[in-house]
Amino acid sequence: MKIIAIGRNYAEHIEELKNERPIAPVVFLKPDTALLKNNTPFYHPDFSDNIHHEVELVLKISKEGKHIQKKFADRYFEEIGVGIDFTARDLQDKCKAKGLPWEIAKAFNGSAPIGEFLPISSFGDLNDINFHLLINGQEKQKGNTNIMLFDFGTIIEYVSKFFTLKKGDLIFTGTPSGVGKVSIGDRLEAFIEDKKLLDFEVK
Ligand code: MG
Image 1 (tube, rainbow, N blue to C red):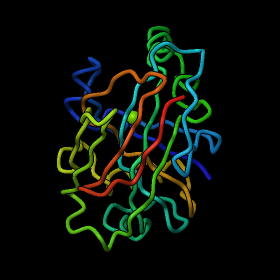
Image 2 (image 1 turned 30 degrees about the vertical axis):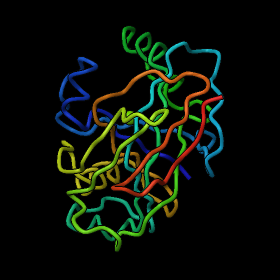
Image 3 (image 1 turned 180 degrees about the vertical axis):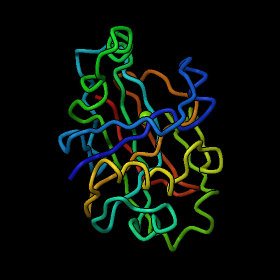
Image 4 (image 1 turned 60 degrees about the vertical axis):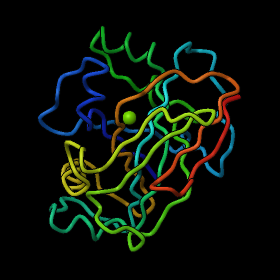
């Protein structure tokens, strides 16, 4: 399986990192070795002093497809969950400054914790889903799909032009504002609406 991730999908997050607003989704990949499941602890790597949390809604692809039109995109995912797109911001800043790819900053081991998934049927309007992240009990990030620059259908249409989507692939759909550094000992809890779907510690 593969993990496809979207960057710069929430305006206030683009502003906090002083990035440009994209005209098409910004796309990158993480390997399956980035996954962390079952609330397993995240072991802070020693190659970075500035690992940032980015809480994101995650789509689980339910059937193979490519060149998917936006109007049919909802046939290709049946579950939505929440995950963290851990980012070594110090390494990413160095890569960006040199115009180099970001993979070491984004795709390292354990950089994609995911929680439980909920069936699409448990949601009302997919364009009005609230999610948030607590760290040590304090709210650090909150988002709603109604403020995404590119909605789920647009993301699926765009990424499936380049990559065949396969059953079990995951799409991280971008983070709202409020990203920041995590430290050893932190406890991260991520929610969709009032349902806690992810709960793990940084060790
Ligand atoms: Mg992200």
